[in-house]
Length: 333
Ligand SMILES: Nc1ncnc2c1ncn2[C@@H]1O[C@H](COP(=O)(O)OP(=O)(O)OP(=O)(O)O)[C@@H](O)[C@H]1O
Image 1 (cartoon, rainbow, N blue to C red):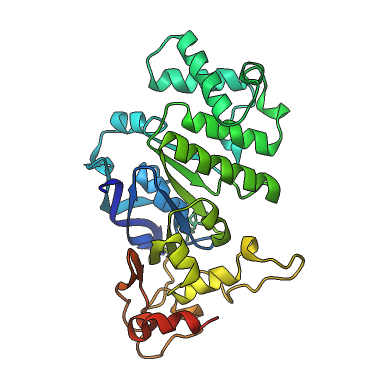
Image 2 (image 1 turned 135 degrees about the vertical axis):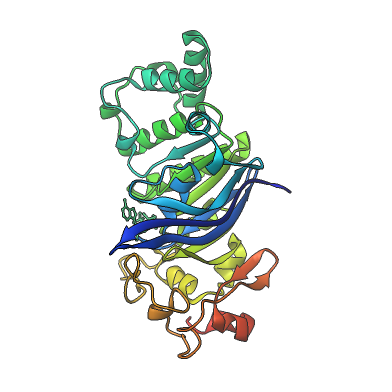
């Protein structure tokens, strides 16, 4: 299957101490039509910057230093600003963690939906109203006509996030980027929103890039996982394979620390000791070396590892894994 979206060797830099430091360094991935790719990693891994770069929305003073973002074979990074405005919200839409950043408190839900639809589709108000009601029904509002009249402030956090999803889906995008879209919600509401996104993806056929720090959410929505650490891709593969046989010590650490995979309520979860190195302070060698429980001096702290195949469509960037193969999955359990 050919990819709908193909990211090749993406590098995003921010100035740090008079030098350019990479927040995203050599990241590549593909997304097929109708597929969900989860991008996982702790805070500061480069998940958001990667997705902002897809739509050329990296905040100043950041810049995309190199790479390609092919959407249906065309490089979005080479498109004009006006062409990109059509893509954003039209072909590729985003859902953010905080619905208040998307919703305007001054206008009704209906007004905002109609506005988005008419910005991308040159259609009458009546047609836009019809589409607005249709998308509200799709995201689970049983009485869309009444919901059109609501103001965002009248809705709970979960319902506001449903409206954000309706806004994202209003113009029938091919790709929806969800940046921690369920992070601030209660656990039961989070599960409902994840289920809604999964169901709509299957019914409507769009693709999802699902950004999360909680690897435990991924089996509920994703087909594949890309694990990022300090701006580097360290593991990638089909979700079941990565969760059942993680190859990278960082992935193993994330799985141990995942709240959604913990069955024992009230028990403190282990965390990965240390933190992601600040931008521009990555040590030489493997990106994870300073926190890795199985790093080998003289190897892991000298050269950056290349990819090693771990199974069909599954690969791992780790020196230890390259030497020990599948045995590596047991080192840090
Ligand atoms: N506006 C900015 N100016 C300078 N550095 C930035 C800016 N935005 C992000 N960065 C840096 O880029 C790196 C990656 O940030 P990014 O937000 O992509 O991480 P993340 O994995 O999405 O984590 P989080 O969930 O905390 O947003 C971090 O080191 C961060 O400090």
